Amino acid sequence: MSEKRTFTRIETIEQVHVDILKASNEKVDGKIRYEGLLKDVSSNGIRLHGKHRLEKDAQLDLLVEFESNHSQYQLTANVMWVTETTENEFIAGLELDGDKTTDLESWQKRFT
Image (cartoon, helix red, strand yellow):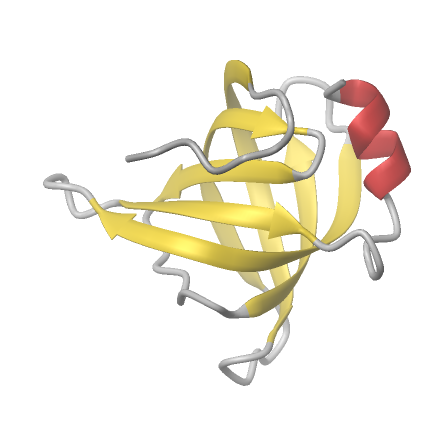
Protein backbone atom coordinates (compact mmCIF):
# COMPACT_ATOMS: atom_id res chain seq x y z
CA MET A 1 0.00 0.00 0.00
CA SER A 2 1.54 3.30 -1.00
CA GLU A 3 1.71 6.19 1.44
CA LYS A 4 -0.70 8.96 0.46
CA ARG A 5 -0.89 11.00 3.65
CA THR A 6 0.53 14.47 3.56
CA PHE A 7 0.75 14.69 7.37
CA THR A 8 3.23 12.90 9.63
CA ARG A 9 1.96 9.57 10.89
CA ILE A 10 2.21 8.65 14.57
CA GLU A 11 2.39 4.92 15.23
CA THR A 12 0.22 3.95 18.20
CA ILE A 13 -1.98 1.12 19.36
CA GLU A 14 -4.82 2.34 21.55
CA GLN A 15 -8.21 0.86 22.34
CA VAL A 16 -10.92 3.26 21.21
CA HIS A 17 -14.68 3.41 21.09
CA VAL A 18 -16.00 5.14 18.00
CA ASP A 19 -19.66 6.08 17.97
CA ILE A 20 -20.87 6.63 14.43
CA LEU A 21 -23.52 9.27 14.91
CA LYS A 22 -24.30 9.85 11.24
CA ALA A 23 -23.26 8.22 7.97
CA SER A 24 -23.96 9.58 4.50
CA ASN A 25 -24.47 6.13 3.00
CA GLU A 26 -26.92 4.65 5.51
CA LYS A 27 -29.60 5.64 7.97
CA VAL A 28 -28.26 5.43 11.49
CA ASP A 29 -30.91 5.03 14.18
CA GLY A 30 -29.26 6.10 17.38
CA LYS A 31 -25.57 5.37 17.17
CA ILE A 32 -23.36 2.53 16.05
CA ARG A 33 -20.63 1.68 18.58
CA TYR A 34 -17.48 0.59 16.81
CA GLU A 35 -14.91 -0.77 19.23
CA GLY A 36 -11.48 -1.32 17.87
CA LEU A 37 -7.84 -0.41 17.83
CA LEU A 38 -6.47 2.85 16.61
CA LYS A 39 -3.30 1.71 14.86
CA ASP A 40 -1.84 4.96 13.67
CA VAL A 41 -2.96 8.53 13.33
CA SER A 42 -1.94 11.84 11.87
CA SER A 43 -3.23 15.30 12.56
CA ASN A 44 -5.76 14.82 9.74
CA GLY A 45 -6.29 11.06 9.54
CA ILE A 46 -6.95 7.79 11.30
CA ARG A 47 -6.34 4.14 10.40
CA LEU A 48 -8.91 2.19 12.35
CA HIS A 49 -9.15 -1.59 12.91
CA GLY A 50 -12.35 -3.28 14.08
CA LYS A 51 -15.30 -5.54 13.34
CA HIS A 52 -17.73 -3.01 11.80
CA ARG A 53 -17.47 -2.55 8.04
CA LEU A 54 -17.26 1.07 6.96
CA GLU A 55 -18.15 1.92 3.37
CA LYS A 56 -15.60 3.65 1.13
CA ASP A 57 -16.52 7.27 0.31
CA ALA A 58 -18.98 7.53 3.22
CA GLN A 59 -18.95 10.74 5.24
CA LEU A 60 -19.17 10.07 8.97
CA ASP A 61 -19.91 12.10 12.07
CA LEU A 62 -17.94 10.40 14.85
CA LEU A 63 -17.36 10.56 18.55
CA VAL A 64 -13.95 9.01 19.29
CA GLU A 65 -13.26 8.05 22.92
CA PHE A 66 -9.89 6.75 24.09
CA GLU A 67 -10.31 3.96 26.63
CA SER A 68 -7.07 4.79 28.46
CA ASN A 69 -8.08 8.27 29.63
CA HIS A 70 -11.69 8.66 28.37
CA SER A 71 -10.80 11.73 26.29
CA GLN A 72 -13.38 12.35 23.56
CA TYR A 73 -13.26 14.04 20.17
CA GLN A 74 -16.23 14.88 17.98
CA LEU A 75 -14.97 14.52 14.40
CA THR A 76 -16.20 14.41 10.84
CA ALA A 77 -14.36 12.09 8.47
CA ASN A 78 -14.43 10.70 4.96
CA VAL A 79 -13.76 6.97 4.49
CA MET A 80 -10.93 6.88 1.95
CA TRP A 81 -10.37 3.11 1.79
CA VAL A 82 -11.46 -0.16 3.45
CA THR A 83 -9.76 -3.56 3.56
CA GLU A 84 -11.04 -6.82 5.07
CA THR A 85 -8.50 -8.94 6.98
CA THR A 86 -8.27 -12.72 7.04
CA GLU A 87 -9.63 -12.56 10.62
CA ASN A 88 -12.94 -11.04 9.37
CA GLU A 89 -12.03 -7.61 10.69
CA PHE A 90 -11.83 -4.38 8.75
CA ILE A 91 -9.18 -1.72 8.37
CA ALA A 92 -10.35 1.71 7.25
CA GLY A 93 -8.48 4.86 6.36
CA LEU A 94 -10.35 7.97 7.49
CA GLU A 95 -9.50 11.52 6.46
CA LEU A 96 -10.72 14.15 8.90
CA ASP A 97 -12.78 16.95 7.39
CA GLY A 98 -11.32 20.24 8.53
CA ASP A 99 -14.36 22.24 7.43
CA LYS A 100 -16.84 20.32 9.56
CA THR A 101 -14.84 18.81 12.42
CA THR A 102 -15.64 20.48 15.72
CA ASP A 103 -12.73 19.04 17.76
CA LEU A 104 -10.12 18.98 15.00
CA GLU A 105 -7.92 21.60 16.68
CA SER A 106 -7.78 19.59 19.94
CA TRP A 107 -7.11 16.39 17.93
CA GLN A 108 -4.28 18.07 16.05
CA LYS A 109 -2.68 19.31 19.28
CA ARG A 110 -2.71 15.75 20.63
CA PHE A 111 -1.27 14.17 17.49
CA THR A 112 1.17 16.75 16.16
